[in-house]
Length: 296
Image (cartoon, rainbow, N blue to C red; front, side, top):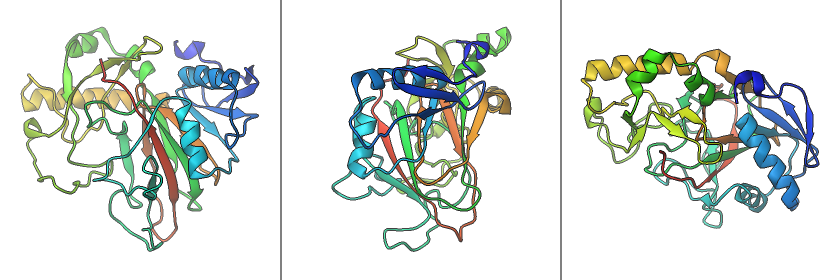
């Protein structure tokens, strides 16, 4: 589906209303209460809208952790997060993480992501089998900042020049396991500066979506990535050009949070980022991630 083929006007689908947020990515889903059990027809409609728009925003939801997990399960198996990076909500809910700038005692913190910018990335692509999607639910938000932006990697791939397509054909990149999306070193890793020694799996620069069959750029995170088989200089040059292309504003849409919003994005064909915000204000989000398959 090219950008011109993505619906730009609201439309009805399986008992829900889909309101596109931009011509390239994102749609608001109206007429749904995800605290309740959803019919098979509604789940099919949501899945179709998700595959079309890559990111869905559902506003004004009041859900418990159990309901958050149940909603995520409509799209696949909710999985436990990476315990070296985030703290599970409770032992009862290992599938939920709190992405926050306060600790469990509600004291402000500045480790993990804190209030810093989270650069463009794909969730947990530093794992051999990354999650297929993430569902982020807002519980407390700052008065400004902390917006989440998503970007369409189908379109970024479709717009590559023939020359750049030939350059990346069959190539992989190492996805850095040692640093988080704010560039901070994770516990247990050395501060390795040579990208050829970056720890992490090798994933194709172009992956195929298993449901749609479409190809998308799959870049993970920029810092300390490396393209095996190239010199460091050539790898850096190629990755710089790919990232400059993929992160153009024309492929992106940014969501300004309200309490009770749930944003569902597809990690297989979309990247996302978070704006920084004032550390003096609280931001507490709950996130689930949905088990995926090995990129190909």
